[in-house]
Amino acid sequence: MVDRIEHSGLQIATPIYELVNQSICPGTGIEPDHFWQKFAGIINHFAPINRQLLEKRETLQTQIDAWHHDHRENFDFAEYKAFLHSIGYLVPEGPDFKVTSENVDSEIARQAGPQLVVPIMNARFALNAVNARWGSLYDALYGNDVISEEGGAEKAGGYNPVRGQKVIDYGRDFLDNAAPLASGSHHDATAYQLRDQQLSVSLQDGSSTVLANPEQLVGYLGSVENPTSILLQNNRLHIEIQVDSSHQIGATDRAGVKDIVLEAALTTIMDCEDSVAAVDAEDKALAYSNWLGLNKGTLEETVSRGDSSFVRSMNPDRQFLAADGSALTLSGRSLMFVRNVGHLMTNPAILDAEGNEVPEGIMDGMITSLISLHDLKRVGRLSNSSAGSIYIVKPKMHGPEEVGFTNQLFLQLVGIGFVWAAIVGLTMWRIDLMF
Image (cartoon, rainbow, N blue to C red; front, top):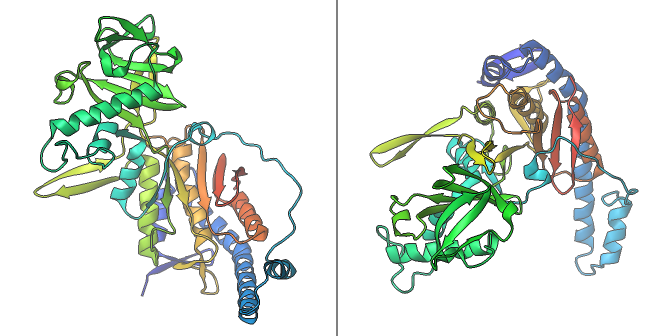
């Protein structure tokens, strides 16, 4: 039997109640009593509508199943489409409209890059994903079949210098394509320096050159004469050339380059739905606790490998000097979305006044938004959204009524400022969160 606490007509499992009251609310400016009162009001209003929408789904599905049963031998697409219109499964297309946007982070509005999806209940996976904003090109290539094992370039065993050289050559090809030189090739580079706020590259024939597009230089580390890092940009994605001639790899490189680090996974969906199975209050408490740790920058996980272990945590921001010598800070982490559960599921973590399990999607919306206030208020150690937004993915909606329902729900969700809702299959729009 699950221990429950009654509040505002809700029967709340103790793990959820204690997590919200003791860990989530502090720092948000929202009092627990006020939160639960609003929660109860939202459940009382929206849960019956949620059930009606699901009943309509069931009715439509029954009609569609019957049609297919009756037309097994004589399927006609035009007739089928007309049938779907007649039962309201397909609806007339509405008039053209425009969606305006503001307070959208660059990772969504201006950059294009990979997006990861990770089960939020697995802290190690979540940390790996959020830290995948930056990654070593050399490491990725060395263990990948992009690099052939022919000619003595096997990857098994210890470091293979033959394979290593293939990786380096691939990296130079990449630089020639992504950040070409005005003359010559990165393959022939013997030194990288900054001169007059431009990248100067010494070549093997004794000449020097610059970037074909000088504006691709973003920043550096070290001194201008002997930089330890050169930060470039291509299509708004960053490329870091790391220089260290004392490093195992850098010692074999003409220019002392030890690695090329790429800006990779720009965004990550922390998934409360498809990739997890949260069936009770303990599961939901774990999911919410991890989301809280991610928003506050405090999530950690001890990883054991053999006889040793280490603590994995969220990467700090990356610090550079701009070409003019001023400070430059780039996010060290992927921008996080949270995927709430869809309309279909309920969860026994919270029961309504009649003893019914509340819709899990409403519970997710309420609690994940409340947690995200830690980021909006900059309570945590690290920042997620520099634009001051919350990003919620709402999946598996069947038709405009369900989308409209979500829109109305989000208008009532706990929060301050803006929430941005990425609705699967649709576009993205601003939702004002009002108490």
